[in-house]
Image 1: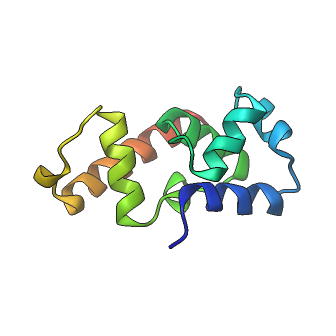
Image 2: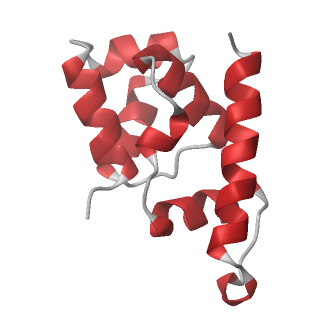
Length: 106
């Protein structure tokens, strides 16, 4: 399964950017980008939106599987018990949030 970090790395390389260049563009450290790409650290939603803008893609392109989506939702809302979530409902909510924030960033 392709993880968020793998997708970030692929798009970064496709754009011809170094980790340091991407970090500067999204106001993070090179170390943060390294950790996101390695899957050591979860990518905050605001950073994910910034990275998607740099790549000129919709944020959903970075998180299109259920496990990643649920992880981001849980981190965003600081949730721990994933047994009570409906992934379809939460996916719709997350995509709505992403779309609204993505448009505002234009």
